[in-house]
Length: 260
Ligand SMILES: NC(=O)c1ccc[n+]([C@@H]2O[C@H](COP(=O)([O-])OP(=O)(O)OC[C@H]3O[C@@H](n4cnc5c(N)ncnc54)[C@H](OP(=O)(O)O)[C@@H]3O)[C@@H](O)[C@H]2O)c1
Image 1 (cartoon, rainbow, N blue to C red):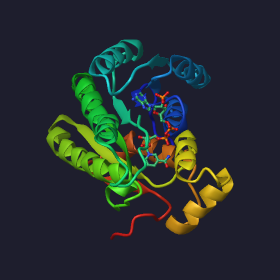
Image 2: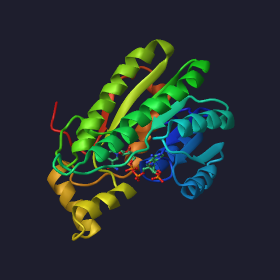
Image 3: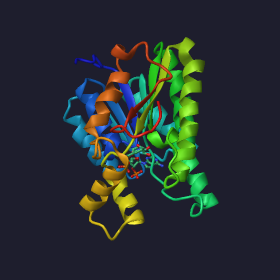
Image 4: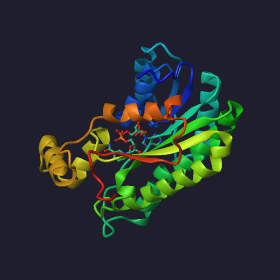
């Protein structure tokens, strides 16, 4: 499908690796100019160099989405480098695995900051640019646990539910402005953050054994997903083919989530 993203201006937070990197690549392949950030300048510059192979304008810069000043600066610099902003993919984040018994107040605060407040800050900063261009798209990368509670991911479950509420409410407030806001809820997709979860939860198992056991227990399709099984949906939501979709919550989770 040709998604006609030629010349669209997109920001992908957390674009240096994992899902963000795949999403930035997919948007650039579809013709968008792309800005990415992460906290590691070297890693994000390297990812930016690879993105440039698609022949689009690329802006890659270190910025921490938990720091309001860095977010402001990154969005302003991205808008200057790309010539505007049409698309924001709020992807940066990481897991804080743990049960109610193990999570500290500090864990909870950090989790809320990197998940919910990063979406709030980045959305706030891009809005004037989207309004200048007559509309835009915000796509929030979320987790299926926000709808399907899992005590092993207690903070994720609680904070992602807040991200879903944020997405839906923002979609209603911004509909008159032509800014469409949607959530893509991930189940288990193989990315570098899973190396951390593996080490935290079952260091005695090999990576293969760990992924296989998790998938057997939790995923109806019986396997982890790959980042390119997510990036196509994000590009679709960013495109004109999704012009009547806002406030939607779409699972990419191999059937995880026991609800109707
Ligand atoms: N993979 C899954 O199965 C899964 C499941 C549910 C939800 N998700 C969500 O999907 C998103 C992407 O996850 P992933 O699996 O691709 O993780 P990943 O491989 O660890 O990549 C995360 C990206 O976000 C960046 N990042 C993390 N904290 C940041 C911060 N404070 N400021 C700026 N950038 C930051 C990372 O770079 P630096 O660390 O260098 O900053 C990296 O570029 C996350 O929000 C995650 O919670 C993933």
